[in-house]
Image 1 (cartoon, rainbow, N blue to C red):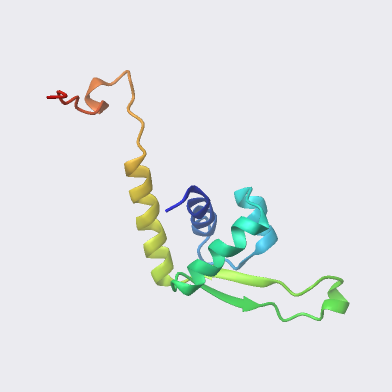
Image 2: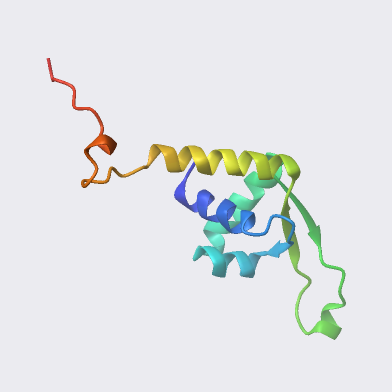
Length: 108
């Protein structure tokens, strides 16, 4: 998993029941649209997200309809698992706690 994908999943997991739209996610993740939308498309194709268009009159609202994204129940479980694995693989040892340092193996 890439760091940008992890950012998107973390933003979506902050409130998994909420519908989120592109600009909202761009602000939450600090990702550009050219990075964000391909990630969202891949997550939809993987079945981790559902998507729907907002039902508004663009003329009355003065803006285009938004496309909303929401984690599926499977997506919530998979996202939590993926982020936990990523965190576990990127743990930085605490130098003040020798037991947290990785074991040093001899080069021979």
